[in-house]
Length: 312
Ligand code: GDP
Ligand code: MG
Image (cartoon, helix red, strand yellow):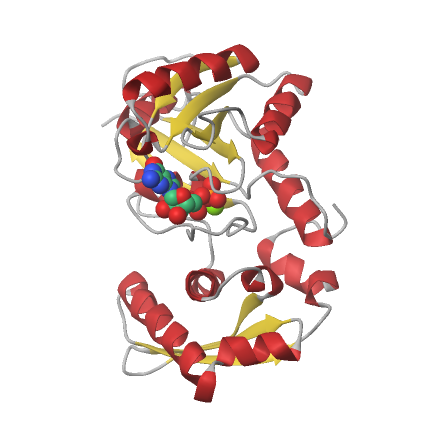
């Protein structure tokens, strides 16, 4: 096949490539959509807000177009330093993108638009950014309700196009992807065809453990912790030994993460290991350590690994 990267060529086989930023309030379903469109786990998902802490790329190809999805942390009113860095990373993702898609949880927006979404709509207007509206979680709402919600959002924002989707069951997501692929500019592909994400394995491994912590721990605790991969040791038998530290802010949190007789962390480690083995397609020996470091959220080193701006 001939490959042309000349923007003027316009031939059907011209390679195209670009970035599609997924913006939205916490829990709108951005990471679920990034995973569904790439057909892989590129970003962790949980029912808790603020699961995604940094920009994560999910890469997929439609015909000759490489679509680079930019999953972003939810946008909300920031209170702590980490919040500010996350929200700033999300807006940066939008600024750098060819297409911005705003995800809205249709069920949550049934009565009125939530204040985080209102804030994002205002931000997009201020920056003169066109956006596509993705009304997500349509599996939770009746069709007639959906149209009313879409109408209202359309009057509140500046949307060039609306898609009704369910990131969870996949309905409508193919149409959205095809639309993006057709809109992206001609240009050479930025990633090899088999690459699904830009996340280094060490960070991805830490993210998987963090997801299991989010899924297994209650209430506010997940926000108080972070996970780091300390060692990654390739073994001769093809397996890998991974040691990770779970940082918490207080002794009481450490006891909760450990659980009675260490049962909780053991369970979390087992489920993380199982997923890591599937993900990396090899045996994994995972060792988790829990440490108290009350000020980890004020430590620049924690931000560097995620590529977050410490001073945002
Ligand atoms: P994010 O914070 O925007 O990245 O949201 P996540 O992708 O982490 O999803 C938040 C929660 O919403 C998770 O429990 C998902 O399973 C759920 N979710 C995401 N998309 C859908 C959807 O289309 N339908 C339903 N019913 N749930 C969804
Ligand atoms: Mg997310």
